[in-house]
Image (spheres, rainbow over the protein chains, first blue to last red):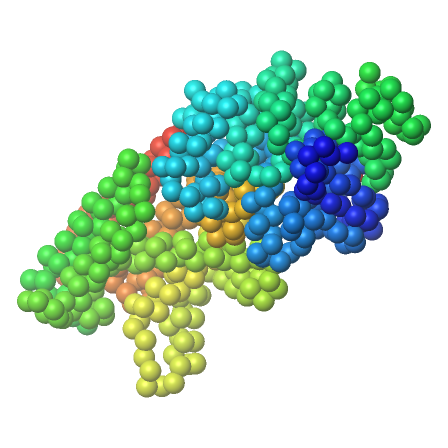
Length: 247
Length: 276
Ligand SMILES: Nc1ncnc2c1ncn2[C@@H]1O[C@H](COP(=O)(O)OP(=O)(O)OP(=O)(O)O)[C@@H](O)[C@H]1O
Ligand SMILES: [Mg+2]
């Protein structure tokens, strides 16, 4: 798939259970450097669980995941490297409500990477500018619109200079008129070569940006194909049914 | 038993003034800074020097001779100053994934919460002497303080735990995704938010701790209440009983009322930050 060579994520035969519930079944997925993978599928199919396994917010029972050369495991040092190599953007933003926008951005570099405060602040202002919310630097998250909050959240993830960005339904909690400003910011990132795994139902965005679209259902990846193939010639019946629901 | 000699009373008065001024300074949000911690530590050392004496020109005064408002202040500040960090440790420990830490915290908290402060204080006074070897005596005030600290810690731990539970899971996800470790993420993000949510309940506990200092008089420690009672035993004072008690009540009212008002101010202040 990848036209840039290097491989950033390799997931093989991944299985995960919540108690008795088999939430991920034999997942195989490879994400190349600067590739964009979109994952879609019905609610409860395991999309979030898969994403959260990639940065070890969730553990898994079988198979293996390697991200940027780190085997995803509980080993402290490798877990640290993994968390620094990945950034995550959440459906509900998860900004720190008691900190100003600027502090939300600097807290990672300063306290996780031990960067000097002044340097982190300068960089934070740059990042905020990049997602076009520089004028909100001294406000608290509660004072921002949903779209602004999500763009701040993207900037916060970028502050750690991750090699892989994970997005879990970044626009689902937004009012319709704010979805585009967030998708724009993501598109720009994609154009700058960021490697991204995105759970979303924004099919227009997926068509434009993705190298690969994966369709998940009951814990399996039923279909993984390029956008053209995925939309024009889906192989599985479930994919077709899902797409017809969306449109 | 002799109280502090009259000519040494000014030392206690200085302690009260010092502590009150520093408390007012600390209360002003503009001055919130980590430097407050060493400042308070220095204040504690100065207070101890003033109270104990036996350095410089100050004659020694043992804790069994302490009394009055200075003692009330010392009991209160020690209770909160040590009890509050203890409460945080208890609350975090109760959520720990390590079974031993969790068990120790749960058992301590539940036992203490099943007791009244009076019984904790009597336990400290009586049981400790039973269990300790005969020649080892621990200062009575110190024992009462330990009892009060543990009592405050156990009760406030449950309040803080409530606050921790109110922190959304997404916040934990976010700190992990940023690679912040347990200590840093708890100090900077999780605890700060938890404490904010439970601030009113916490201030309640703190005001309670101030009122609870009077229990010390029951085990023979002459806090302001004990001192008032003692002075009334002097015949020439007895007829002023009403005035004496009103005066004591007034002092309690002033301190507790200002704490309550202050907490309301802090609440308004932090809700402004969150408002859309
Ligand atoms: N911590 C958990 N414990 C138990 N079951 C869970 C847990 N988290 C998720 N599940 C279950 O696992 C299944 C998959 O959840 P997941 O969040 O991965 O789905 P999803 O595809 O992201 O769904 P959605 O589109 O609604 O976000 C769901 O049925 C959910 O109820
Ligand atoms: Mg989900």
